[in-house]
Structures are given as structure tokens and as C-alpha cells.
Image (tube, rainbow, N blue to C red; front, side, top):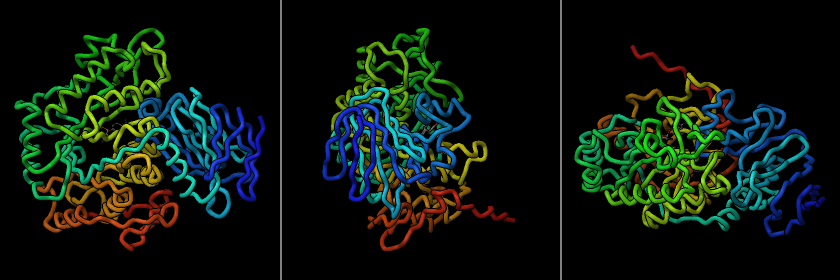
Amino acid sequence: MLHTFAFHDLFIPGNVSAPPTRIDTGYLIPPGRVALLHPFGETEFYRHGWNSWSPSGWTRTDGETIGIKNSPGRLLTADDAVNDTPHAHSGSAVGAIAGPNGDVLLLGSLGLGTPRVGADGNTLWARAEHDEAGWFVAYGPEQKVFADYADLVSERLGRRSQKAGRVWSSWYSFYEGIDEQLVARTAADLSGYPFDVFQLDDGWEPIVGDWTAGPDFPSGMEATARTIRDAGFRPGLWLAPLIALPQSPIVRERPDLLVKDEHGQPLVTGYNWGSHYHSLDTTQDEVKEHLREVFTRVTGWGFSYLKLDFMYAGAVPGHRQRDLHREAAYRDAIQHIRQVVGDEVYLLGCGVPMIPSVGVFDGARVGPDVGAFWDNAERVGDPSGVGARNSIIDSVNRAWMKRLYEVDPDAVYFRSARNLLDASQRGMLQDVAAILEFKSTSDPVEWLSESEREELRRYLERSNEVRQLGRYTFSIDGREVDLTAAVTGTYVPEPPSVVA
Ligand code: 9PG
């Protein structure tokens, strides 16, 4: 049916499935397809990515689309592959187009069902694989309409209140090369630094899919958790509980517990660790029981901050035992995990589908991995590739998600050693983390000079007064920070100086 949406002096004709309801901040539209005829012509479009690593940001409707191009494996891992439209502008759950004077027209889903929003020079449209959530449409100042949208989403899906505090993570220094002695030494060196959490990342487990202590942790994970606690920190642990590598015991022994393809074979749900991997079918009772065991075990060891990674793989299309929409299956799985660990455990989502994680996760990663370099030379043009540049672009474009959960832009660096980022690039990362209010680093004390140690301390101790001034401009403690060049890609790094 046709409906005309009235926003002050702007009238937008739209095609909707049932009559919308006016609310103070805009309109609620019942589930079903939506097409709005906008008067802005070719303009800017805000594209939102499906999971933590998926590209998000503003582009022109008559310009290049934002997304992962020409790389099916990465697309499967780092965005919603089946709904991607490389030749047309579309994104996940929410989209917006820019009108005059900083006002935007936003259209966003209020729930699950892999909702999709797209635009061109005439229309802003929305549809979902599984339509039951309904939509919000609003027109007004950019920050206000995004905030209003976020508030409606968390009204429906919840908002947790636990804060992570300041986090040290092992990933961006040691990667998988961790062992119990290195962890003990690193934690002892950090003792007295104002960190709240010391989080072990990937590398402790024998193989992804087997969440027991690996060979480099011969004393067991409980001993390591104790070591971390004795150093003065809350023990944190990484795991990817919904996926398993082909060589893991669960895949070899119980392939029946996996999500299947159309031939009944274990479905490939992503790529990493030089391999493909599979997903657990969380709709099966035995898988729920397995998850209960895993989470009872790791919290029993003493870890109370959990970084749950590659979670999108629990929401990919595939054959599951129970026939419910993939995002509903995912939410059911994370609610089960939350129920097992209880309210006191901090859950940081990584590689999570963004909207279906609201209200269950305390925090979520909102961009690709950082790296100790600006851009990835091997994957130029892949906006989900590792590096400071891509991480900053995605994270800043998702600052509005603060209202849904804590937003983690990933680690920042203080070290100049073993780092290709110069001081100004390190400063940008530090500013982005201050703006998003989530401070983490991976620098071992040993890798820092005396002055870098001081800088790190000051950074962690400072609580910042942050204000957003414009789309990419902020004030941090009265200092103006303009990230426009970095986020829009016009920032060109200085060529590294050659040290004789
Ligand atoms: C551990 C790492 C770290 C890191 C996570 C995640 O799109 N991808 O293919 C992709 C692969 C790995 C990845 C991110 C994206 O890294 O983000 O912080 O925990 O796993 O293995």
C-alpha cells in the first residue's frame, strides 16, 4: 500500500505492507518490504556491514559500492555473503541517505531475520529474509536519527550494563605464539599497570574446536587464570565456540553435530588458520549440551571475561536440525551461552552479527583487526583486511552503536619497536579508542621504552571527555580531533623514513 511519510516540510511517498505508526522520533513500519521514494537524487548512502569485520561507511549512490569484492572466501567470513550486492548499494539491518544540511533519512530494522537496506538515486528500500521485526524510518540530524534508531533496537533486544574496563590482550603482540611461561612473565611485567583485564587470545587451545588446555599450557588453564589473577587482573580468554577445524576431534568424531550443506555434508562456513572450518548446529540438544560443558569448564577455570570469536558462523545459511531462521538460531545459541555463564561474566563478541547480538553481549568488536601497519599490501582494496586503516574506518562509522553495547575498535599501540605505524598513526588509533570508550592494547611492557610506558599509563588512567562535533570530528578533553581524512581514505601515510 502507499503511504506518505511527513517529516516537517519533507514528504516521502512510500510503498509499505501495512499502515505505519507515527512516534515522536519517526515512524514504525510493520514487517514486509519497504520502498521509499526520496527526493535527494544521487547522494551519500550509509552502508552497514553484517558482522564485526564487515565494511561500513558512507559512499555516494553514484559512486563505488562498499563491500568485499572479488573474494568469495573472505566475503563468506567477513560479511553476509548470500545477500551481498556488489553492483548495487545495500547493507545489513540499517541504511541511510543524506539530505541537505546534515539531515539524513534512515531506514532500519528493529530485529532479526537478516534485514537488508539499500538505496539508489531514487529509492531507499528494505526487505528481510525472514520478516517479522518491522522497521523504523526517521529524518533529521545524522547523529540524532542513528541514536533514535539504536535506542529502539535496544528497547526491543536489550542493553547490558557491564563495562570491560581497560584490557590487555595477547593477540597483537604474540599472536598464536603463547605459552604458560610467556603469559606468566608478561602478566607479572604488567602488574601495577592500570589494566582491568588480561585476556589470552587464540593459541592456548590444541586446535580450534577443542576447548581444552593445549600442549603449551601443561599446568592447565586454571593455573594460568590464577597467575593472571595474582598479577592483579581479571582473567580473560578467547574462544570460537561455534566453529571447528576439519582436524578437530568434534569434526572427526561427530560430524552429525555440524551445520550441513544441501548434500548433507558438513557445510564450509568460513576460512582462517590456512583452512576452511565448519559450524556447530546449535539447534541440536547435544550441541547445546556441549556448549554448556565448554562454558562451565572455562568459567570454572576462573576466566570471567570471554572474547567469543567467529560467532557469525552460527548464523550462516545452511541445514540445521530445527527449522528456524539462521539469525534466530544464532540468538538462541548466544542466549543459551549467556544463561550458562550467568550475568557476571563479560562477553565480548567478535565476528558477531551486529544486531542479533544486542542485549546478550556486553561488548562487540566493530571493525576488522588492527595490525602494526597502516594498510595491508596483500589485500589492497579489501576493506575487511587487517590493518590500522580499515579498523579505523569501520570503527568510526559504527560509533553510534555505543548505545547497543560497548564498542571495541580493537587494540591500540604504544610501542614504536616492532611497529610500522608512526606516532601520528598510533595517535589516531588511541583517539578512536578514546572516542569509542574502549581501551585495549597488546604491548608487552618489555617492548616499550621508558617514555612509551609512561604514555601508556597516562592513557589508561585518563578518563576522557568526548563529544562528537560532526560525522568524523570529535572533541577529546577539549582537543579537536578530525578523523575525516583517515576515514574517507584521503589520508596518505608519510613514506617510512629510512633509518641508516
Ligand atoms: C585470533 C584472531 C583474533 C582477532 C579476531 C580474529 O575475516 N577474517 O578472515 C578474519 C580472520 C581472523 C580474524 C578476523 C577476521 O581475527 O578478530 O582479534 O582474536 O581472530 O585467531
